[in-house]
Length: 337
Image 1: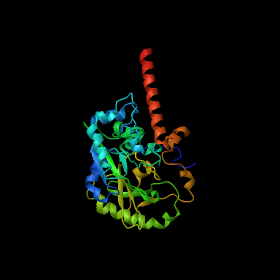
Image 2: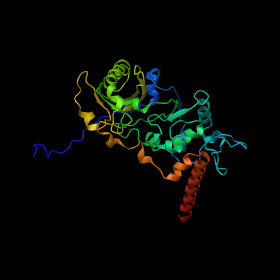
Image 3: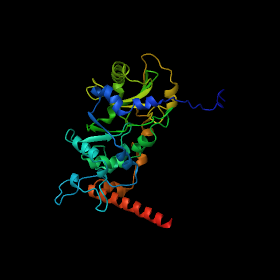
Image 4: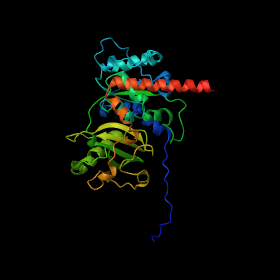
């Protein structure tokens, strides 16, 4: 029997400060590194009334009133006749969201830290590619990840700010090759590891191993290290062909709530860094079976919901039914009380 076989596993604490979380808020890092970001973005301060709407049980989606001869989804009336349009509570904010579509044809939304990737099944293309303000509301309202930003962003931090200013980040939609996106982990201002972001097997990545290290290490040393305010963090980058330019996609806290992908957090918390040696983890032909699950699979939904997501009118009808059902349950509860 090995000498240390009875030694209990050690859970290594990872210290996260309030400022570490704030530094990773999109509007903060974008102000420093926007020139290196993959997508242009417009950041709108979120009014309290919109926060209240996101946190409410009301599934009514703000939108334009339908026209008799509507030709496209943007003309659909998302608001049941018996309910006021929620947008009346934040008209100026609603108007600014609509105005953004004059600058960007399609938009991918997120709040300060999280994007609603878990609710993309609500849109026909099953991506965050939004063509109208109603698409944006639908994604935000249906996302547990958005709830994280509103209620749990500072769960692992040493303290919580007295007041959090939320922003709606409206990023210009741009196609991305998921095989060339990487998450990089920094501890104590040293780049420790690089993980493939999309956990599928791509044979050509093996030949790019040295290029990945060289390009991302140079980007970290030249761009991020001199300006970013936290000593430890994780950052996502995109390295498209011809593999000469690195684009910044996002920055996340060095915390267990950030997906460690092909590493473990205990590894990242205890790895002994070596100069000029960065660990690169890729899905290989031999371990690909371990990762044969679709991203956000825990958010899979019944077939009738998926079918409805392919038809805007069916999706709106389903949401209205949900909202009516919730109202009926509330009425029954009040009567019984």
